[in-house]
Amino acid sequence: MLRTRRYGTFVGATLLSNLGTWAQQVAEPWLLLTLGASSLVLGLDSFAQNAPVWALTLLGGMLADSADRRRVITICQSLQMLCPMTLVMLLVAGIVAPWMVILSSLVVGITDALSLPSFQSIVPTIVEREQIPSALALNATQFNLSRILGPAFAGTLMASFGIAACFAANALSYLPFILVALFMLPRRTGSADMPSSDETSHLFTGIRQIARQRYLSLGLVTVLTSSMFCAQLIVFAPVLIRDALHGTAGHFSAAVAGFGFGGLMGAALLMAIPGESDRRLASSGAAISYGIANILVALNPWIAAMPIALVVAGITMSISNTSVNALLQTHSPPELRGRTVSLYMLAMRGGLSLGSLITGTTVTLFGVREALFVNGGLAIVAQLAIARLWQRAPMPQSTAAKAAAQPRR
Image (cartoon, rainbow, N blue to C red; front, side, top):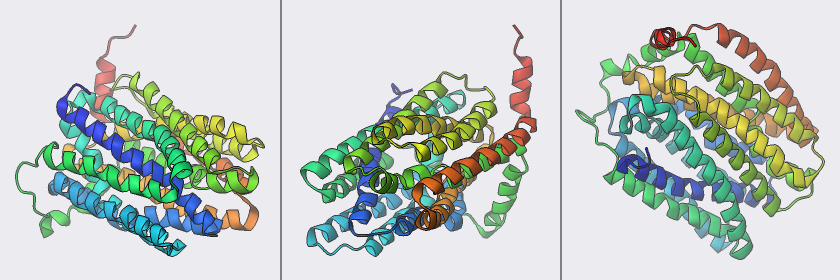
């Protein structure tokens, strides 16, 4: 697929953009901690970046299904690029404050909520249908590769030039992707106008159509549960490393890189699974293991073991979430694909926002180890119950028919 000029260029530009994003993801929480921010403020920053999906991601799904996705992506990415540029100027002037960082995160969250459904639903339009699961796994591979390279890049920049260099690198990394969105991604055929009032009235009808399919809706619940309880591991890793393990920014960079390496391994494992396979068992098993990984990290007393523990967490997260994304995009109706992706983003980013706010409070009250341990335990119990229901849900007719038609060995 990478030999396809359009898809290969798309993946390359996305990788460069994600490198900058992960460089900032390492620098931003460390900047907040150096400014004296508490664990609650750290959770609030994550909440600000992810909470807008609750209000706007369904609108983003409508835009993906009805407007020119190239235009949506270009406008939102251009607005996002202004956020790290502004933070660089504030850092150079020496007047940055935690509320300014949180405001920047809110702008990024709003534009993400509006554009990510368009971004995610672009992939099925530039590959063949049978290639969708592999293309999504490859897309997850580049994302997790950026999770390895980005933190290492951030560590080098912070040591050599300071935190501001990470934000500057992120601002520059938007340019290649904006150019690809403008000149390489497919133009929308037909009208690119906003949907009419009659079409808008069918928004929730389409959402209900997806929600009624338990095979798809329980996958979304799996992602939502992992995001609420397990994804907090990365959000509060800087607090755990600095306060409980007495580590440095370099240790945090290594830990995030370990998480990315695990995600890369998980995506590579998924690429070996045939595209039409039923991935529920893999997703549920990985989601349960993600909860176990949270408990192991909470109990770990050694700073050197953090990257290894986060490799395990990255593998499980990648397998579980990417499996759900693949089955959603493979089995949802093409005319509802943007809204389907918006539901996936709502489960992932919305769950992360709520979990960040709740976990930020529990970390402040009881401690970071205790909060992560409880999160892991709750995730395991919830995912076991969800898996039991999900395995009983009927597969979509098309998939079931194909499975039945395959010769038995």
